[in-house]
Length: 105
Image 1: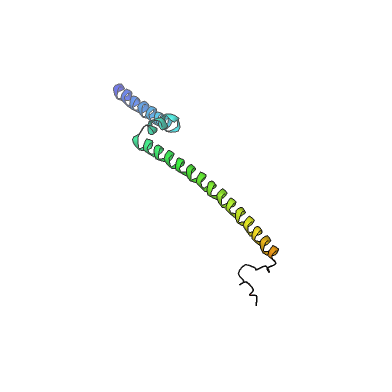
Image 2: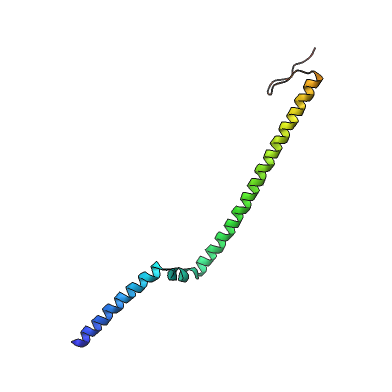
């Protein structure tokens, strides 16, 4: 009878220790260390790093396009002012955008 009680006590202690160890591994970084070593996780980390690098490259390209368009807009505005100055200097009437130029007889 005492052997059976010792056996049941040992099984109960084993179950409690196993549950405690499982909870500890799940809660601590030890579980993460085991998971990080798998091939699937390492592959996903490599792919994520590649996508982040691509995103950063696209952000730089977008900023470059925005700055170029701002410079083009400024150059267009400068040309428009120059054109208006030349037309006023020649004495021609100003033509509003979308209207046909006035014909002189």
